[in-house]
Image 1 (tube, rainbow, N blue to C red):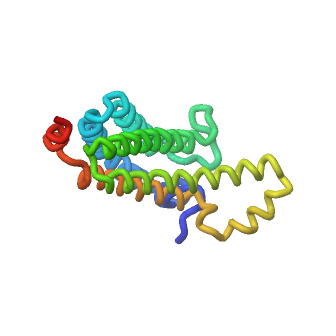
Image 2: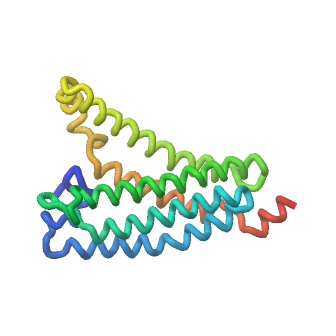
Length: 204
């Protein structure tokens, strides 16, 4: 069964999986908790380049992870407001994505600066940039089209007819792409970031 275009999986939807939607939500929340140590890991390895940027990157990840955990427990509501706020789940989820994107962009800046100072490998910068900028560019393009349909209602139907059968029109596609990008980003942080001792030796 295909997931609805508004969620990453229909298993998370209380409408489509009313009895057990909490189970995958708890799994995502647990995964988010296990991501928390990476924030400290990034901070330790990036602060040799820029302590302020390292704190910003780690802070972005921590804020995004906390928001992601909150989004897991504020389930999508298709009919009713939550705490008087319409689409609260979507707001928290987008906030999580935004904070994590800030952390990733700041880390990319640190990787570029560290590469120029011979502290980091070029592969780290290019890998981080690829998995950060490409999804963000796609999301920006998608949101721009959505804004265009609101500003130019006459263009809404032609754009929808062109893209409605494309995966790029579905929010779930971007959520899966973002999840994969974060996974690759964190893997690169582990396998391509030199140890602190090597960084100190290169800096001396």
